[in-house]
Image (tube, each protein chain N blue to C red):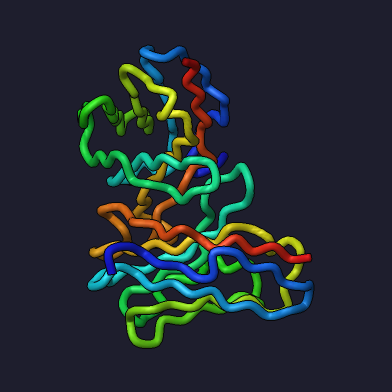
Length: 115
Length: 112
């Protein structure tokens, strides 16, 4: 596609509920990144894929967070048993090269609110 | 010490003035540096990249890099109210995670 597409744009979840956030990167981009952005803060790294391989998941805050990109294109970030501290904007970005050395293109983000 | 540091602001400048935004980073081996603009409620948008010491100009924007001082800056000439946004500095660090590390951003307000 022309840009990075994320869905849903907004998600309200009850505490304890599981959620799944989707990212469709720019066609042909090998690198895909997930970031978490709290209000008034910069994006914080969660995880990185090169094609279907998850090369870095060091930023995932707990084992409740899980990401996959099974066919090297669309990616899903899953959060199990959501907690209030998970409320944030989740940003997906893609890049044509490895490691984002040429910069990223971000999607519009998913705003998650846990109540 | 944060890996990428920015003054949170707000930085307030009058319309037509030069806005100067600054960023320092901790990893001396860093090679790639980026400035993103983020309007309220929107996602970050890449506006400048710089890879070597010196200045890089693109329209009203100039990025400056000094690797010896571990310092990167963004100058916006002839600032417009539409430039009012948060500006994020991002650095690709060779050690640790294989992704850009972002600062917390500087909020710029251009007063008409």
